[in-house]
Image 1 (cartoon, rainbow, N blue to C red):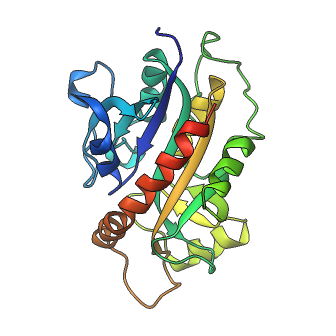
Image 2 (image 1 turned 135 degrees about the vertical axis):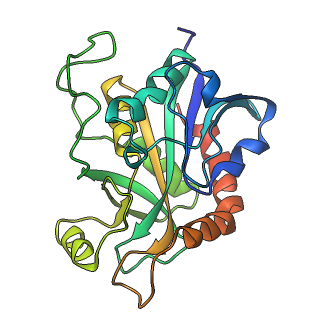
Length: 251
């Protein structure tokens, strides 16, 4: 395992273009990395990109795997283990999410303050590898307070709780009402297995959701993945500028 010096980044649906901005960029298709699950979802490039952003060295996963693609929670979290072995010391996760909080609108970037795991699985199920972390890892600060304050200073003013569901069908209006009742502001089909694995290994996490659509029943319209992609494309420059401002301050 190399010395931990790199910031790891997971790029969600429609947000992968950030990886193209790195200097001294090297790309490796996931299919060339033993054990790494190959992305099949639209909007996920499916490659590991290393490079520099100014004085900061990054290791970027341009796209991720999901439970709905048929992968296990352990497979979905495998990239976090691999990125740690490649020198990751800090993790920044991004995703496309449905907005439950009525104060959000499509295009908003929202800090994830906490999450609710409704996926029905956990990547730590099974024998524990003590070389990674403890059998019962603490999750009381799954998303670093310090990192969230850095992001707020960089201009991200909204914050919320992310609910993770397995997908691939979008939620029903009744499910969205339930999620709001239990305290969720955002809903999506990813991120939580990765964050659990990172916390298990003692890696601090910053999470940012891009609200790509309002959740079912909030607006009188159907949901579509095309809307997710369109909104992700619209905010990509804003997200890139935000990440550039945040990365040098993460430690």
